[in-house]
Length: 391
Image 1 (cartoon, rainbow, N blue to C red):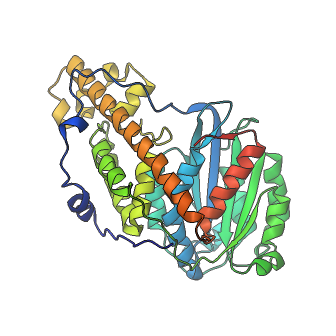
Image 2: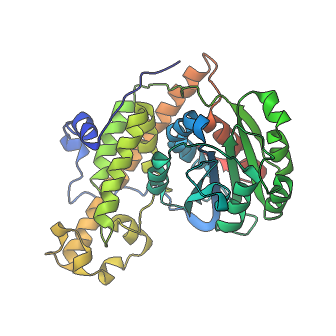
């Protein structure tokens, strides 16, 4: 069941489309209202789920990049369903491109676009900046770079996954993929392969062997197919809540204002792909894995309750620079309470939305795409590592 695509070409368009809705008194948190029960459990650093996504950006892969843009937040939301011993793991995502003639031959035409990071807006920003060009696709080289240069965490509690997608033979290039993949497995890093083309061709060109060797999963997709979406009766309500949650962010530091603006730019990027993608991002923003303590005072205080005592006046946004510490603490506490309330509302709506989508999906077969391939295997591999799914 294909849904209509809503294109939002600029941040201004997003504001005009969604920003005009009125807030009812019931939706506004009174200053003297008792804070609601905490609904978002902070992720624990005791264990991590780390996912490196390696994308072929040669000329033929425009469709793959579009699918990645379309499915980033769906993948994030899948990751958030996993718990380890009842705890929410910290989630880090990294991004590589390879096979692009715009990159140097000395690098084997590969580039680390973003390290493993909890900054999901950064991943979105970098993903939307990718452009295709040319192509010498060396799978062994890019896997080796990701395995050796990313900051993987040791320990049995952690799940470490590499997803590589492309359409040229897996054994191309100067580096033997078998040795690289075996070395990855020694570090408990599972290699999953996604061939953009016919299933049998992917087997013939060693993509399946790469996954088997790496104890991962092999998939094939049609990278030129447009991602299918299912509109739901809850999308507009979640969209409204997303606009409200943005108002709870309190920037600080040298890059605070810039990062806050980038948050809204990534909203617009998600909306430029589809309305459903915008909603998926909105759901992600209501969850514990979406954290911005490096620039948002609400998240920073949640991590360090003494943060405001140590902050300098010039690090604060203009509206707070003339307030004393007590007033700043009260303001941040109010924003934190507002955010928790919105998060709870989005959580309720998101569960109803997902139930609606699952019911619709049973009516007709959905296509395989990059996001479906990654999400499906994340759940399966997670269960094998001792993670449980909690929706």
